[in-house]
Length: 91
Image (tube, rainbow, N blue to C red; front, side, top):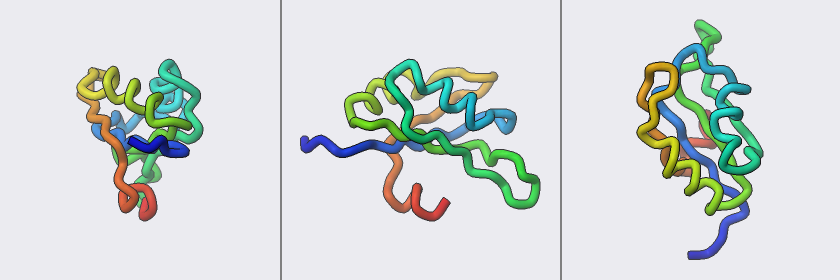
């Protein structure tokens, strides 16, 4: 498999109280997070419960998926998977 320049993960079922900083902190033990962002509801200005985390390499991202997918955080069962290009461009 060819090595990519970076890899973005889609993280769903986050608590609505999760901040961008907390998202980064949750995923930083696996490697340096190059970007962490939450999708915000324009009406309430609160997170919608999902976001994206980007790593420099696929190896780092795969480590994060292995540990974080299915993990309980703030009473919520997280789902973590590789983001598809259409997921990241429109949000």
